Image (cartoon, rainbow, N blue to C red):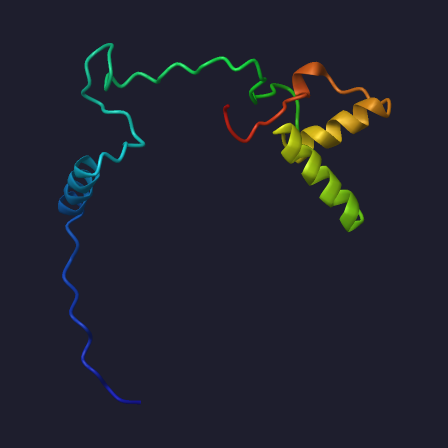
Length: 122
């Protein structure tokens, strides 16, 4: 084995790096993922979460007392393709399409569990 000198690294100044990232974001109008701590009450930039627009669709909510379980199922390719296409056409999730089919097949599914698309707010 050859002995080589270790490569000297400068220690990182995270405060300086954070300030540079913040400056870069502000210059390019990139929104922050964190709400400001020192913002005043009300108005834009107030640190309050924006209100969502009601689109009439159900949103995923925490299900107290309920658990979700995975059910591994092997299906033919054409069935999976059809499920995906129906979900795409209906702008819902694959899960919702399958739950609709189960409901039509006579399996009880509570109305609050029939969430059209829990992946994102529309």
